[in-house]
Length: 268
Ligand SMILES: C[S@@+](CC[C@H](N)C(=O)[O-])C[C@H]1O[C@@H](n2cnc3c(N)ncnc32)[C@H](O)[C@@H]1O
Image (tube, rainbow, N blue to C red):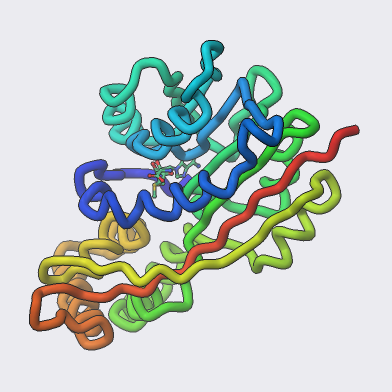
């Protein structure tokens, strides 16, 4: 589990940009009008709980019988922030790789978290198993691993290529077709799509500030000492600033790809 030292404050720096794909995923979920009214909702890798709260609100509004909403995460720092946010949501500490629900789930949701969990070809069928027949699994994962923001990490860290490659491997996803293949045996109505956002970020070293709270964490931890970290950071920032230049008005455009999937578990 690649999950030490999450910093909720740093992660929250680009809160609106990070919330957007979650809102887009929630918007595509079936609505109450179509008969979908989940009573047991789980958000895997809930982080600071901001998305869980939006999800809870989306399926509680106008209902007297509020659904049970559970947020699962392995980071104490993230869960501490989540607990302060909303005490109607059950916040559970757990590792997604071994987590099991105590009852079938109507809506199994995960935004920007499963790329940290290995072995998706086995993980996905396992997660689908926890969903009640007729229930929904809805996932969003970043798909920016081939973009300069991520490739330049390898370039700036060429001196420590083994450590960097191993650390980068902590986060990975499959191809869209592979997700279709692992979902299809148990699900129908499979909806897979990709979106490229073009985030408008403010401040100096904006893209560095973005990656440093996510993909860069295991890389920094893998570098041998502070001197290596300083050398790496300088090279990485220089390269980033060439590829993602700050505009005269102080803003930086950051294209970012994400992969979405929603599937309904087949009724037996
Ligand atoms: C990028 S944050 C996303 C948080 C939240 N879903 C959101 O959209 O704001 C990724 C979260 O996944 C959690 N995470 C990563 N690996 C995990 C694992 N194996 N089990 C549980 N949580 C994990 C991290 O602790 C972190 O809070």
